[in-house]
Image (cartoon, rainbow, N blue to C red; front, side):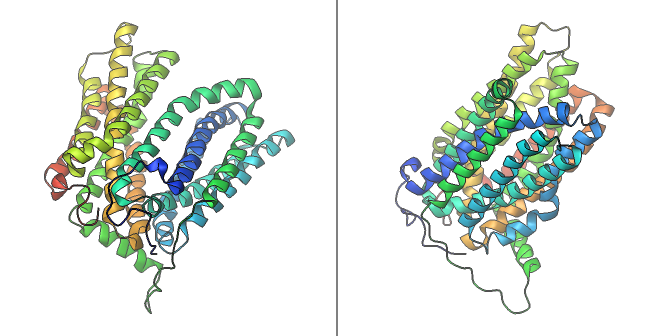
Length: 428
């Protein structure tokens, strides 16, 4: 897939991305959808527990259905995104999600929402989300000058962080005020508006070159893997982020239980700590472009990876327990969350932007799918192993293992050419 490129892609300086009409529409659609999804997630949890009355095993199945499409379809859909119109894919998936969300209040009012219907909804949303996310990352370089990719991804990261922080609180309030059916009506409207905004983006996408005789989608997938894992800087970037996801699978499984059960933090204190993490992520996304421009993409990613070690090592070595005063617990856990959010804010914008800029448009979908799908496979099995790890070592030691894994992710960059990579090199 080729296109003429967005205005400014021929090498002009970095611009304020929200002044670019195409990106402004894309950012607005993504932002309102992010807030809506954060609100809907709260309503989903309430439905699962109160309406469906799901057992722990059923809750695990419902959560797994959101990830399952990546495991089975991630590579295939990534290859399709290098041959399909990405804008059309975004519009159709937004319409599809609007229809699915509109179906939920109908099922609620008719009394037909049960485990199996909710499982079908979760699986359908998972597939639609996979298509949308597979189209989004390759689409951004088509509407933003490559010199402004870091700024664009930082803007998207800021919106995502604010939505993830404020959305759940808004969801809880709306759930109390209007109830679950109207929340899902609201969510359907948001996705319909998102589809309209995405359809108004002006971008030129030309058809990809036809496959040579004897080639099929399997060859496309392998070509994407070869490009990713043979590239001198993409290979260490991919390997580093895979290792990072292994560490993240441990902390995502362990942290909430450690804070709420082992340390005895009340829900309000845990919520404050998580919100402080959102503040750190927002700040990291704000400074990410300046950090990347000043020290280079590779070192900016390395700073983020290295900083990720600190919060989990802190929680592993500081002697915390349910007997620790609440003030100390809240301060230590909040500091850890702030540092973790800050690290992700700095590294994400530089990581994603470097990937988008270094890869030719014709292979963007497959390169992103190779990295994203492998990340989720690692996370899936890492989360399963984390339960065994906690049983064997306990909570604090398991967080120490996660810190060690994050350190390995940083070391992959230290001992690779990625360390010296800069935005603007090799077509970046």
